[in-house]
Image (cartoon, rainbow, N blue to C red; front, side, top):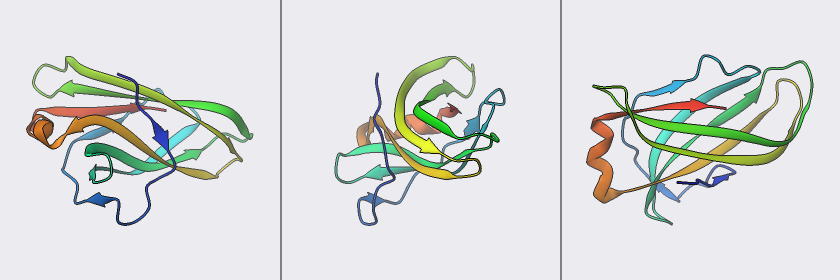
Length: 122
């Protein structure tokens, strides 16, 4: 299921988030991800993951950068949903950009978050 990656939402567009384990893929080179939060966006009614993406390479990155989010069953580690998207940006070394990823999960599916974890691969 494709996802949209947009600049982080402004204040007032979200309600209190749920807790979900979020791991960053250890094989991601040149990126760091921080301040990741799962929240319900009141504008579209879907849960989103928002956070900060940082360029840790010594050179500027230009163009489309992809983020993959894999939702996995905590007990079996099997993938239950994978979503991906891209953001068009220019990032100088050490600079950051906010992201906001729509997961397409709604409040009706919120109970599933107790059984899954998210792995992000920038």
